[in-house]
Image (tube, rainbow, N blue to C red; front, side, top):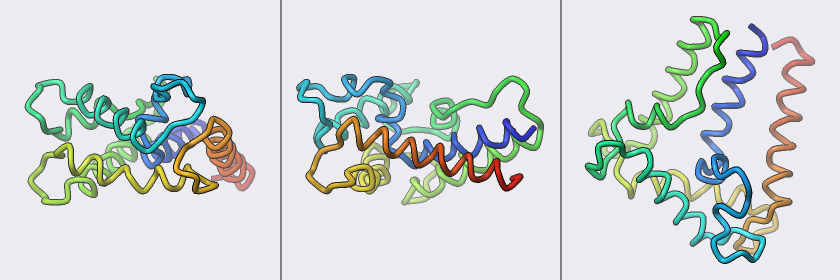
Length: 153
């Protein structure tokens, strides 16, 4: 049960870390010019591709169902409480992104919600995200998870 809860927490954390980068396994999948870094332009292009991939009905908007399908899933042994927690977290994030409160996320809303996370990952503020900055970000997330585990949460 503890591990399932932590997976939910880490999954929720990934929602807040430029989803296209978090899902783009190797750095090279977002690094389209091959320079070993991800520029803001490359990150936004990866975000646009992520949006298109999630838009399964190709109507140019994301429904809650489409948005939910693109988020990290729970492990098979997840409890009902973990499932409810994930649903609540994903629902809150959807509602936050849906700025005009019409029950759908537009490409502009999706981009606007993600833009601040580029700046967070760009730790040295040089306008690009390096592989080291991504690794450091995930290392901090791992440390936070270990701290939670250590304190019994």
